[in-house]
Length: 106
Image (tube, rainbow, N blue to C red; front, side, top):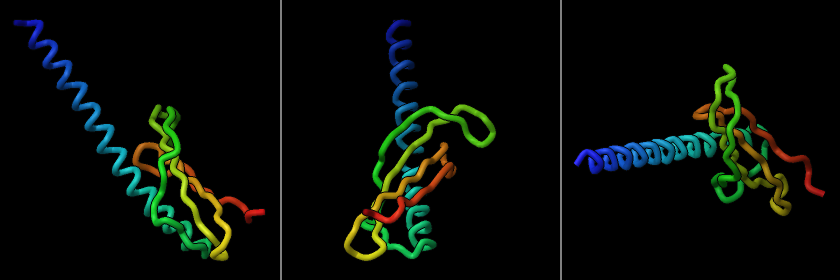
C-alpha cells in the first residue's frame, strides 16, 4: 500500500511540474507577443502573422546570475510590404533578456 501512495505522489509531483512549466510558457509567450508588437512599432515596421513562434529553450543566467530557462521566440516583420525579415526575443523566465531585428534583407 505504501508503494501505491509513493507512485501516486510521484505522479502528482510530475504533473504539477509539467503544469507549472506549461503555465509559465504561456505567460512568457504572451509577453513576447507584446514585446514584438512594441519593437515593430518603435522601428516603424509591420509585424507579420501577428504572433511569435517558439524557437528554442535552454538554460542560462538571469540578470542576477541565477540559473533560469531562456526561451527564444522569432517573429517576421516587413518594412516595405514585400520582403520578410526575422526578429527574435529571448525571455529569461518572465523577463526580457534580449530583442533584435535583422538588418535590411538582401
